[in-house]
Each structure stands twice: as C-alpha cells, then as structure tokens.
Length: 211
Picture 1: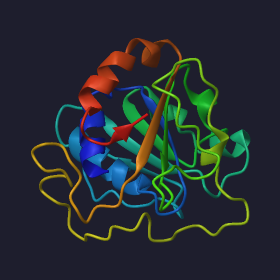
Picture 2: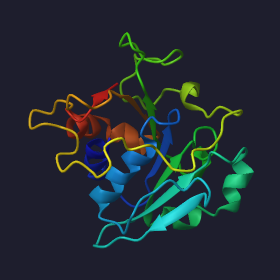
Picture 3: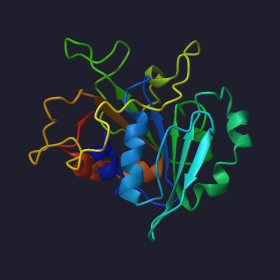
Picture 4: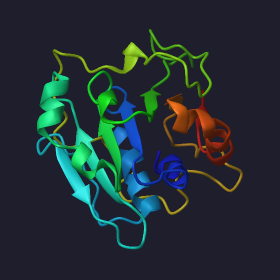
C-alpha cells in the first residue's frame, strides 16, 4: 500500500481531493503514508481519527498534505465546520471514510476503495469488480463505514512495523510472499480525473491489482 501511495503521489497536484474508503484494517492510513512520502511532506503520517484532520507541510517545493478522517462525522455540514476547503487550493487533501460526505469540496475528485478478498480469492460481498477508472460511475456504497462500528484509534495496522524499502514489491512488481492481498478500485469523478485516467493506470501498473 505504501508503494501504491508513492506512485499515486506522482500524479497528485495542489487542489486535488482523494476520497478514501475501505473497512478497518484495509490499509487506508498506510496508503496515505505512501502518498505523504511521495509528496515529501513532514511526518509522521498517522491516523487522524481523533483529531479529525491534520496538515503535513511540504518539506520541498511540492504541495502540503491535508489528511482527514471522517469516521466520526455524519453530515456534510460537519465537514464544512472543519474548513477543509480553506487548504484545498494549495494542498493535496485525502479524506478517509469520506464517501458521501466530502465530494462537495471540489468539482473533481478521485475515489479510492480498498477491499480485502475473501479466502477464496473473491472480493468481499457487495464489491463490484468490474469497474476500471471511470469518470461516470456513481460512488460505491460498499466502502461506507459501519455506523455501529468502533473507530480504530491506532490507525491502520502495519503488520510489518517499519516501512519496507522496497515498498512491499520485488523488482518484478509482485507482492512479497508475506503480504496480504488487496484489491484497489479507482474511480475518477469530474473533468480533471477523466482526463487523467490513462495516466493513472500507467503509473500504478504493477503496484497493485487495480480495477
């Protein structure tokens, strides 16, 4: 997931909004750690569940990273109270659990849904594996948080501890034997990501099973 985030960071620019969904433990925060590393921002990047939003300034000339967690939010009005749009123009904004809440912040955004396949290799129930990066699809409700669930105070678990210098990939782009597989669905919304669809697939090719 870190390797995927690093590759994705190469496509992100100031003003971009990324809406990130997936179950607890799917690797959402780990993906954002990769984005932060790729953008070269001040870390560490950790789960902002209890602070809701955290700004990571750029160490170089690139954009800052605004990392938010909407798990505890229930309405777009609560999102408005965070003033995320105040930083949106000059930053890359990534919102975990943001589906259905933050899309009004920008005219174009990238939906990312992470799922863990069932033991038989099939995606979790309710996941539609048929979508390529598609600017016209509606958001996938399968990535919404469970209202009865508990927040994860520690962020996404990282079973490996320290980041793997290889990003979890061997030179051929295959997952290491001890890596847990993930399926990542990308859906571009609006003109910006419709135009970038081809570039997304070229850059991310080999980093994950991207649908």
